[in-house]
Image: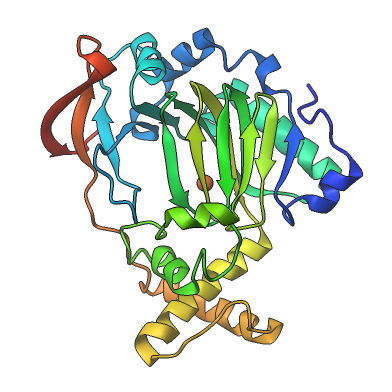
Amino acid sequence: MKMLTDWSDSHTESFQNEIMTFGHNLENTGLFSDEALISLLERHPSEHLDVCSMSDTPDPKYPNQFLTGDFRGVPGEVLLSAAKAGRIWINVRKAMNIHPEYRKVLDQMYGGLARETGQKAHNANGGILISSPISQTPYHFDKTETILWHVRGEKRLYVYPLTQEFIADKDYEAIITNDLVDDLPYDKSYDASAKIVDLQPGQAITWPLNSPHRVDNSSFCVSVTTEYSTRESGIKNANMIANAALRRKLGRSPSYLSDGPLKRLAKTGLGVALRKFGFVTKSDTPDMVTFKIDPAVKGFIARTEPFIRNF
Ligand SMILES: [Fe+2]
């Protein structure tokens, strides 16, 4: 099946250089209907499934406080109802990679993009996001190229400029080296500079690498997010690790944008070595489970005594 429905030469020109949308055919695969999603939720390995809610009292500067839920023993049908009714979103991580029928579609999606753009994606990963009408994805950036393939419902996307004001190198460095638990700092005034897109089913959106963005749902939504590495993202991330070391250990003020190609090449080597020798630390904040899905409770959220996630 052809996955890209309206691709033109102007899409090829804008791809990865501008905020752009294009048409896709995912809904016609039949893999995103209620029945298909219920079956998927029941088969998906629990270590790759997240059932989350949002904090009731988020910090306005760092609103990225997700609550982790316990979904063990809950039928797929109830999980789907919870996402339709409550403050719940479900991330079926790597769904497009793990299950053969979804994998086939992922290959068609990326096969189509490779044919149109001449670019091959490395390590393409695809997850399925099932989210409630009041779900919000707070302000953040992705470390690799991302495409959001929207399948059902309506959501509003805010994409922000790729400048120091919106994503400072020092914040990027801190996040890439896992030194910061919090996400990018956000201020409501940023919205005046955002490009706002109301995504419709059958529309996909992508943006220049690392552009900060956030999402507000307007209804129950089902989307696929795919992420993949490119030479550019690999080089930039290695440079940010090198720059983090220079800033912190040597008191320098490096800037990725003002480095020339030779400097970037040298810093790529340094960044790769630093990663290998343990400069990048894994976040040691444990994933605490604070609620469980309970159809007997309004909103499906029953608070539990917090415990470290073990499933
Ligand atoms: Fe994102």
